[in-house]
Structures are given as C-alpha cells and as structure tokens.
Length: 180
Image (cartoon, rainbow, N blue to C red):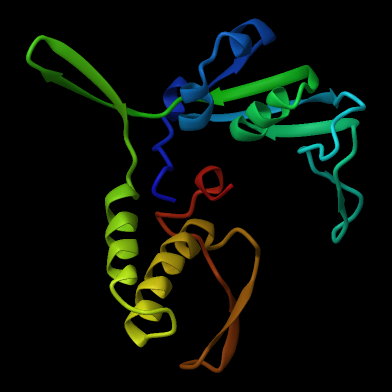
C-alpha cells in the first residue's frame, strides 16, 4: 500500500498501442493501466504470468487467451516474451507533487499512504512476531486496506444496537482502483 499513488482522474484517457509502447516502467508502475486484449506466450515459457478464470473458484495460467491486464502484469508478461494484442486500454496517471529545488524542477508521484504504512511497519518490527503490540500494528495496517475496499463486496454485518443485519457501505477512502 505504501507504493500506491493518488490517481489523477482528470488526466485519465484511452490510449493506443503506440502510446503504450512509449510508456516507461515508472509510468506503468506509478499510474493505473488496464489493457483489454489477447495474449500468447512462447511455448518455452514454463510459468505464464497471466491468470484466466475458468469459474469463480478456478484460476489457470495458459499460454494464450483473453486478458485484462494492469501495468505490473503487462510488464511481467512482456519480460516473459508475451505477445499482447490490445483491443483497448485506459490509463490514469498519478497526481504529482511539483517542487523546485534550486534550479531543478522535481516531479514526484503523490503516495498518500507511504508515510503511515512505513511508520506502522517500523513500529511492528520493534516487537516479536506474536507479541500483542506486533499484532496491534498489523491490525492497523490491515484496517487501512480494509477501508479502501469497504462497501465493494456487498457484504452484510450485524449491528449489535439494533439487532439487525445491514449492508456495509463505502466511505471516503473506498476506492476500487487503489484496492485492485
């Protein structure tokens, strides 16, 4: 979660293969890319990296098929020699922090969770695995992620005050793009 960048939705756009081929690894890792297409790995690839879902509980990794890929998945597949035929793609770049240091302009992707996740991990490492404080910091980190996905699965929870079940709703932090 510490590597997640803040999406700049205003700059999101459909892209073509030419645009995708010119994107840097940093663009693909810091932004949010979704590629719809087909793929084919060379027969020599022992462990293809693109998952395909047979049904709700079964995932396979074939040498060819249809795909929806994120930026990191696209990078790995290309490194494995995969040929990807793109039908469509959408890219949302990260929001950037622009600073001037002397005569140099610096653009850095905004990573809203980086400092808090690093803090929680540092505090967690101060205690042995299984120690109550280690578990407390682990729960804090997991709760932050839980708030990103809150309200997306249509789950129900029990309200002890009313004695009734209710659907868990999204919050200001709920974000399917960051959660994926």
